[in-house]
Length: 125
Image 1 (spheres, rainbow, N blue to C red):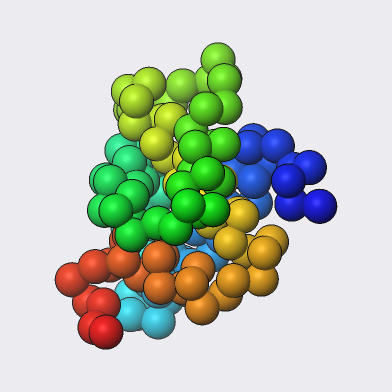
Image 2 (tube, rainbow, N blue to C red; image 1 turned 90 degrees about the vertical axis):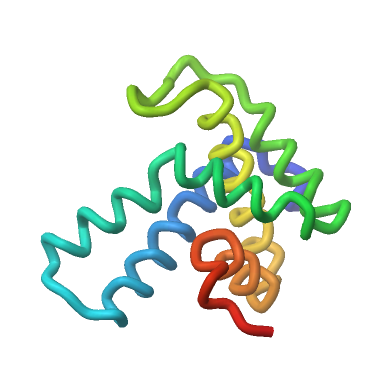
């Protein structure tokens, strides 16, 4: 079933996964909602997600790398004004990876990679 979902479909799910993860982390850290929204916007931008993708690429299994490539290779005419084409492709790949892991039920791996991608300085093995 998961192989029937397009790269764009996986990225659509993964975008929501990232958004929820970031919001939960920020709320748990505390702060005013307006401030939290500004911080969340920084993390969910294509530029930051591209950096997270670069951090994670060496850690991916073959299946995870394939899911990342499925998203990265999605063709779109929509490009955020604050991102390069390369950043946007990496961000879409990252979203597809997280969508794949979520749908696959790989919650522990998903959590680990989210931490390593977005908060690597806080991750302790």
